[in-house]
Image (cartoon, rainbow, N blue to C red):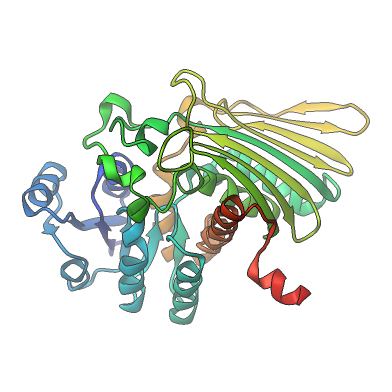
Length: 358
């Protein structure tokens, strides 16, 4: 292939410089032509350090670059909608970071715009790209587990210091991070949307949609802020459109040496037990027969460069899109409903299902 896909990154902050920019620079099918940061000096420094030709300070400046074909939106959550809408509106393929937007209505409008323009639109969720994720999805969709009746998830990740605005150390990049997130990125509700529900449960909600191919019909949630401005501990009860029951427990208040992501899937013909942070997966038949899948290597557990690479895959062959933005919309439905439920103490029907029952 002689022509490379020309890409830009909006929001060249800590995660973009750790994951997306290195992924594009190492992909022979891609050409990273521009990065964007609001501060001109920082933009020029990032561009110089990574060897990127254009250092932009605004979305419009980047989108005006000739022949730009694809954009990664890796800015703070409150900017996602405006930036993605501008890129999609100008015919650019888009990979958007999680949480997709601050409101479900915004996420739906973006998805509709991408579909009308026939553009590739992806949500950045590295968990969707592991061998275990692919195998679990295949087993569920093929009916090997029978009908899914219940899913239990416990997801922890030490990010509570970020939600509290008490520190800047990233949880994945560690000391190797080129940049660190600002205090307000995770702790200011006008920027982050919410705490654990927006920062981490968004992963779980998208993963549920990815595995099952279903959306959620109703949500009941409790949050505990533990003295913070935003939620630190979240407990959710969900019902999927098929009637399957789901429990999610998630917190950012955990040891840096012990993070947990247990997913237990109970079907009428068998169960799947996954531990995503440890890279383990086991299938248990109703007869008691057990099958352990090969453990993932440390590099395979959280493939942080996979979303950017899959953006290129999808542009070249749309059938290879492993994390379509519709999963981000499904996650936003859960996030928004859970937030309303936690404030009101009520069970919340997802709007599309509420309309059906009216």
